[in-house]
Image (cartoon, rainbow, N blue to C red):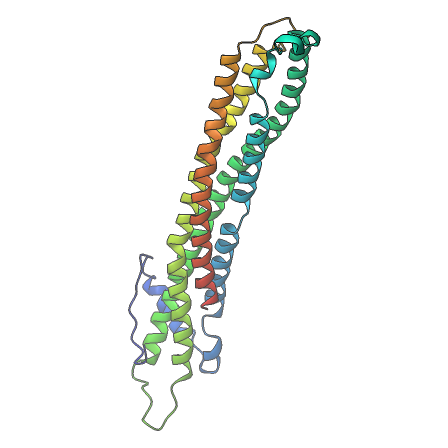
Length: 281
């Protein structure tokens, strides 16, 4: 404010009175242009770290991997186990078809296992990023408190130093306006950091059923196709069971894909708002 007054906004704790006093007493008239520069730079750095965290590409990568796994699973059609009828069946047999189907399952299971490992990695990454964002949030809040202490000291310094009509503004007034803008940006970033974490939690919740379902599908199909032991067993697979197990995993993937699309939209909005906060400085 032009008159040097100071009014706190936001939910950050008030600066300690002794801290304000120390900043006020350390004032040097020839350094107004760099007043509170470490505090300002610290706030900007926290905003940039929050923006970098929001820009991760894991949602897009997970969507692509799940789409690939879905395509592979859809290619496994249990009806292919049934030999053809009539003349076409003369050179066909259940044994031959089972052998071919087992080979197709083995290839598909390797793909689904790989996707499952990727899912597990992303889920772990969400936990690590959440911890890092907790740190960024706390440090950004502390940067706001530090800026508040300097702004309060600046307001005190400017009180009683209103320039006459023909005098230029005190150089600290312009610096204070810069610090006010930085402080407002840091305050605006705080809820956006939490929004990033909330989106991450939703992302992990979408992936967990797919990761668990992939393991269940692999093991159940392996047993149903007589591949659980050291050597393949002679079995007559239950097509309905195989179809039910496959479709359960497909349904989990479909729910995840739909949720990831919505999460990507939310993440893009958060990223855009954080970028706007940063670029506004």
